[in-house]
Structures are given as C-alpha cells and as structure tokens.
Length: 283
Ligand code: NAP
Image (cartoon, rainbow, N blue to C red; front, side, top):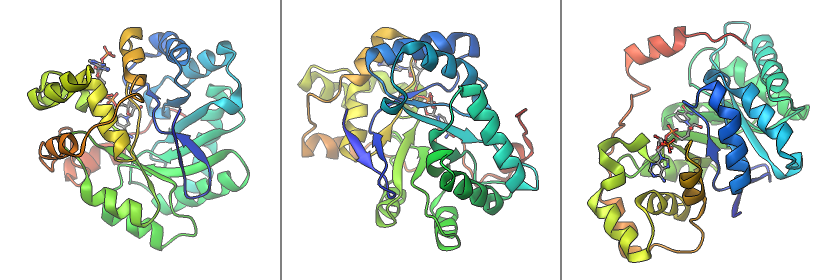
C-alpha cells in the first residue's frame, strides 16, 4: 500500500476504510471483510458508536498490530477539557482493545479546543497515539491552532470530493505540512456522483468504475482517502486503484466539477455550531 509521511515521520496508508454510519451490529463483519480485502487503515470515532466492533474485528483478524493504522476521534468535551479528553481517549482505547491508536483526531473545531489539543499532545508524548490531528478545521481555525500551540496537527480530515475539492485548504495544509485527508470522498453518492457523465467517461477510458476514478483522483492529489462500504465487492473495487493513472487532461476535467461549496453542512453555520457544540456522547 502506498503511504504518506506525516510531519512527525509517521507513515500512513493513503487509502483506508471508513466506518461512519455502519451500525454497530454490522461493523465487525464489515471490518473483517475490509481487512481480508487488504485494508490496513481503519477510521472510526467515539461518535460512531462502533469502536467496540472495530476492536473485535481487529482482535479476531490475526493481522499484526504494527501492520494496522487505527484512527479514532475525540468528541467535543466539557471542561475541564484536559481531564475529559484523557478520559475519552482511554475509553476509546478500552473499546478498541488497544494500548494505542495510530491517529487521534479532534472531531470538531468546537469546545475548549486548546485544552483538548494540549491533552492530545500529552497523550502523544506518552505513546497513547502515534499521531494527532483535527477534522473539519477550516483554514482560519487550522492556522490559529498551528500558530498558538507547540504541535501542528499531523492531519486535517475534511469533506473533500469532486464537487467540493478544497484547493485553498489543500495549498495551506501543504504549506504547513498538515496531511489532507478526505471524508465523504464519494460525497456519499450525492449529486448522482456514481453516474456522473464526466467521471464515467474517465472510467471508461481506463476500464474502471466512477468510484475508482474518484479515489484515484484523490490519491493523485496526495489526499488520504477512507471510502466506506458494507459490500465486499465494492470494498475490493475501492482498493483496486493502484494500477492506473489519470492524465493531466482527466485531472483537469474533474477539477472543473468543483462547486466550491459543501454538500453536507457548513461548519460556520450558527445552527450547526450550536447543535454540534451541545451534542454530548457517552464516553
Ligand atoms: P463516502 O465514502 O463518500 O460514501 C459512502 C457511500 O458510497 C455508501 O453509501 C456506500 O454504499 C457507497 N459506495 C462505496 N463504494 C462504492 C462503490 N464502489 N460503488 C458505488 N457505491 C459505493 O461516505 P462517508 O462514509 O461519509 O465517508 C467516508 C468516511 O469518512 C466515513 O466512513 C468516516 O470514516 C469518515 N467521515 C468523517 C467525518 C468527519 O467529520 N471527520 C464525516 C463523515 C465521514 P455501500 O456501503 O452500500 O457500499
């Protein structure tokens, strides 16, 4: 598997498996199938409610721990954030059955971000996580975090797909050596992505599906991607993207699909800020 090197030297697979919206009672099977298909990066979160099932699949897989790259995410914490972040990470590790994760992400740019970040720095120094990062940080929040803390995030996981390509975010992250990771790489199928004529035509030229074209396009932009699927056929398809290359013209054709706006929600939207900031999960 092709990897990227994070700003602290940790190697991360460029393609992995996401488990958002997989019900807890289906997750162990899905992760078992994904590991059998060759995925080694698993992306879960405390908020997904399926860390235990991911842990069960890992335990029963026989895959060596050092061959896996496991990401989980911290939900927004009440004060004192440093104590609560530590407690939340320990709860996630217990559910996963692991003594460390490979990447711990702050799931939302809300709450006592600084307290949460400092607790994450401490956890990293103590070996509870090999890398730390953030998710859903727009450039203003990301720069503020970088300029006012000792550690720059290793990763920022943000909505990124052909209809919302994040060129400005990408350039900024490159400048500050923060690895861009895409969530919702398929836009969860919105805008009829899987039957989009431009993407379909590129696929035909390579004998590949639209899904494979999208993943290849992300990889060629050096973006780590974590497609989700509960179908073994699609899991196999989604990892089979390392034997072809999009041409400059094809990359440019896909670049033209950018609408520059979210298909989900805007993290600046006051209603969403209120909803996400008030949401608490049990960990
Ligand atoms: P996604 O990967 O963009 O899309 C998943 C959808 O695409 C599912 O409906 C899946 O259906 C379908 N699909 C997968 N492969 C396909 C293929 N080859 N052909 C046709 N359809 C296919 O959506 P996502 O799950 O939202 O994003 C991926 C991961 O990013 C998540 O699982 C999660 O780990 C992470 N994420 C993070 C955040 C955050 O705030 N940090 C937010 C959202 C997601 P089937 O399952 O039926 O195949």
